[in-house]
Length: 456
Ligand code: NZQ
Ligand code: ZN
Image (cartoon, rainbow, N blue to C red; front, side, top):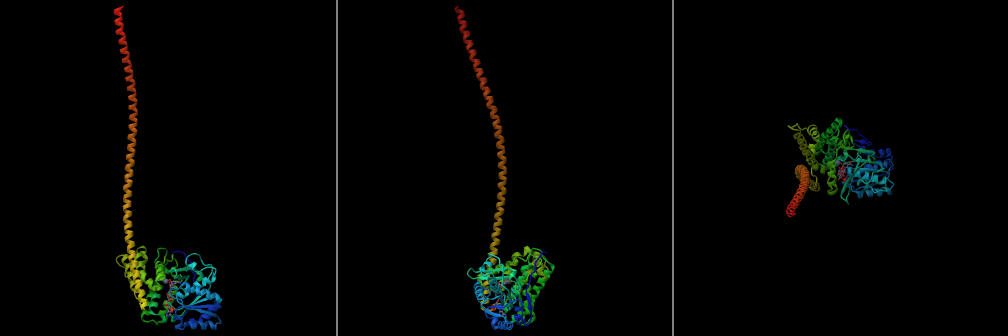
């Protein structure tokens, strides 16, 4: 188990009719001039926007509004919100919507707190925020968990980059959660939201760092609860209790609770989704559902005990003959669960097809990567064998060179003694020749002497 800091400063007002408390809570947290930020049409159609405005009016709180936030919210809208807020002296940002609207509010809040800087610099990793205006939300979809999280995800459509910036400064002051508000959600968004909630829990569950029994139990219980109630809502979308269970799960899955005692995970499925969201504007939860099974099959061997625990405790798998078998059965069961996501419209079906295409590409790329790795391993093996042969050759060469040097030394030694012998021999020969010459000379004298002796 690792040490941790747990910080969840958001006040939660949960239950039927909690929307009517927005004026009271805004007063409590010091908001006097509020920007009400919302999405496309759902907040207007459902009447929640009017209820929010009425409550603020009753509390005597000034407000301006800005709608039009799209899923995977755009930087351009945040820039518009910053300018509008400056012009109206806004001191508090109120999101009426889901993750996209809350994140758009957080980005505006960062921009207002440090107007001398471009807000995108935070998402581009060029600086850290020093301040942030206060943010709160009236949640209308259970999914992203932004209502209590320190995270904010924005898309820059110019560069097709979807990037997150995480900082406790942006944790919302309060969150109003009335499960009834989510009853107007299309089934597709409800199920995509459930997928996202499960992903936030699983990103933190599959770790190789320390873990904690209590955190595991909370995470496993949360996953079982969301899976069960997602199925209930699939057939009974107006079931209040199921809506409430899922809504509270969305906050607990992403406020840090399920990461206590571990390193919090590497968030790879989310990082993959951000790339797809930035380029293809896919629904966040649906895109995660498409990516997760391929990711899980790619990594499960590196985290086997966790996948086995998850298969048994969350997916109810009976342990197989091997741990691998059990882990794979758990992944297959979750894949089946994620397939519950119903395509809602022609556009959703097109997106689902797009995601399926991306998944195939991802799997093909993974296979190519595996093949490339195999070839690289084989080449590395050959290289190692050649290096071994080279090393043996070098040893033999060194031995040969030593033999050669020894032979050469022997030769030099013999040559020196030969040269010495030759010089001595030459000297003796010269002596002998000189002696012979002397002998011949003496003999000549003798002969001449003998002749003279006869004549005298
Ligand atoms: O725009 P409107 O008309 O409101 O329609 C929305 C939108 O089309 C609709 N909707 C919301 N409440 C409704 C409703 N329709 C009918 N009745 C209601 N009561 O639902 C659609 C999706 O809304 P959105 O806010 O995009 O959903 P979600 O909460 O899933 O947010 C997704 C965004 O959050 C980011 C995602 O990347 C994505 O951009 N995330 C933010 C995180 C955070 N800040 O902590 C963490 C997450 O991992 C995630 O990355
Ligand atoms: Zn998410």
